[in-house]
Image (cartoon, rainbow, N blue to C red; front, side, top):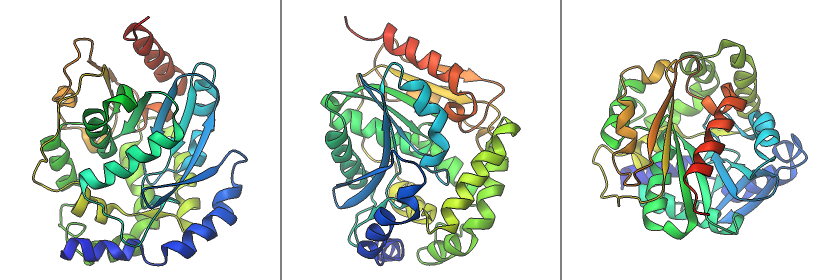
Length: 305
């Protein structure tokens, strides 16, 4: 109950904020930004191209503006979509939003239903990739393939979480939420410097994150750590969709993570792990063309005629 109450710090004034974001700066940064309400959350998203949908979850504190090149490249073969997760960036959850793992994933699954007219390729990053696995298991008709980007197994994710919060500040209800609000602008560049592999990508990603935070964007990591990623692993279903686990090995936050653990719930025989030594936590953004080519080939090789 305490964690649920603390999460209200990330939902206060949700109605006014959603309206302000629809009409203000977040809606004007790119011409293709749109908003849709699903499961009580106002999701901002961008879409480009036609064909099979591939859906990326923007990896906070990075927001939609970082995905220009990705959308341009992927739109040649896919309907490429990128959205912001609840209480991240300019995605506004309703006041009573439930951030627990299964409940939050139900909301994202509803977004997928509204935005994709056929089974989609889910290309989610880090902790949100656990949600993609859950959605693939409980809503299999909505998911054709999984692209797991920097996503380990649940136990490995908990080890990663503890390393990101060594003083256990974000884990404490109320204290964690207040700390994130006060420290987000200072913490974002430090996090990105640790996580990004290709240094030439760092200025653009830092600029994107800090611009969003300056304009009221959210980075509700405390609420995510407390509610969405509890220490006790939930009972998730195994998945039958083909899964490609992508790892940028220059990600300083995942040096000790077991890459093979990404496939711990994946039963499709073609599922595999791909590692890249020279890129970091944002492979799909740090080397757009190479990751696109590998995803396109994987989807082609594992799709029924």
